Image (cartoon, rainbow, N blue to C red; front, side, top):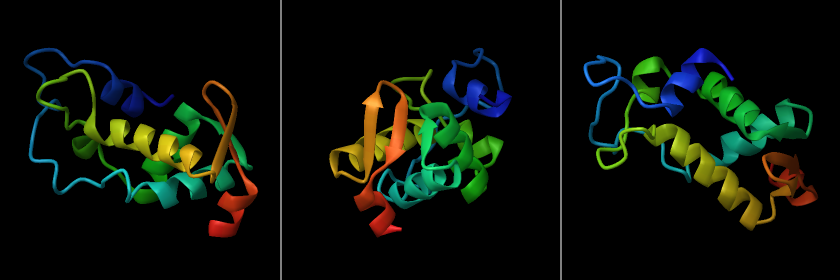
Length: 116
C-alpha cells in the first residue's frame, strides 16, 4: 500500500492540515467508481487484492492527496473516497462483475469482462 493510501486510511493527528471534512458532493460517488474498479482489476491482470485495486484507481483517475484526505465528520478515521472505493468493489461483486474466492481477493468475472 502506498504511503498516500495508508495515510488516507488511518486517522490523522488532531492538528494535521491534510485531514479535513468537507462537503462530499464534489467527490466521486461509489457509482462513479464502479467502472474504474473493473478497469483496475483488468489492468492488474484480472485479479487483485483490495489495496492494489484502490491504488490502481487512485492512479488511474488522478486522485490527489487533498481528495484522499477528506474524512467523514462522524468517522474521522475514514477517508470518504477510500470508503466509496470499498463500496464500489462490494457492489461490483454483488452485481456479478467481480468474484471474490477469498477475503480481500477479487477476480474479474466473465460479466465484468463483458461490461468493459
